[in-house]
Amino acid sequence: MREFMFMKIAVDVALENVLTNGGGPFGAIVVKEGRIISVGRNQVAVKKDPTAHAEMEAIREACKYLNSFQLTGCELYTSCEPCPMCLGAIYWARLKSIFYACTNEDAARIGFDDHFIYRQIALPPNQRSIPMVRILPENTYLPFNAWVSLPQKQQY
Image (cartoon, rainbow, N blue to C red; front, side, top):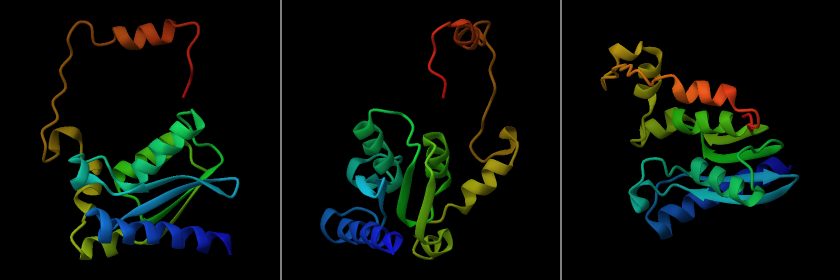
């Protein structure tokens, strides 16, 4: 079955990342029409970038390859269930489907626990552990108003 073949590749990318690149144990690929169009590996520590998760790297590369900010019709295969950040990017990219191997519980058992983020998202902004304070200068809505008035805009 093709899904197992692609998942094996994503898991192999994760393993190679740990053994040869010093990266985290996560790998992802984006597939379009049965062809791999991008490969991503966790590069958080290597790049000193907290957003350099395997899924994010694969999405960025696929978008570059397709010259589009949407990945409609594409599938993502990832060695582990996506975290909240990656899940948000997946929805924004409009991927067709996601296949994953390990669960977020599996990741938590080896020190990659994102359950606290899910709990924080559920709280009102003023109750989160990192303070979020709304500030409204007089120009707050000018960018939104300019966008609404723009006759030629690319919707997303």
